[in-house]
Length: 58
Image 1: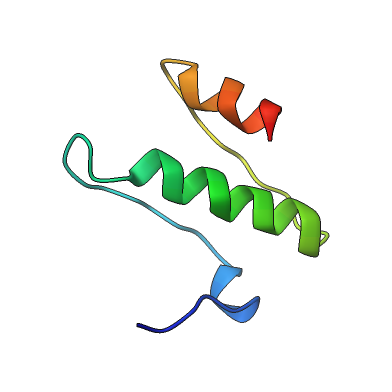
Image 2: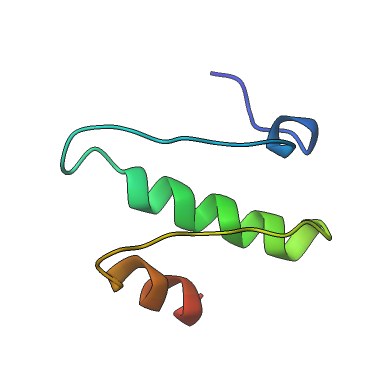
């Protein structure tokens, strides 16, 4: 499996998958990585609000 690089994180991302497939966890860890290692902005839309709380705790 290839690893994400900073170049891979430039642009837009659309993540889809079935319930329980790890979409939220993938996004939380990716956003946390971006926040700590780059000066990029992230827009995270969380209609239920649960993942946003997890992100704030990270």
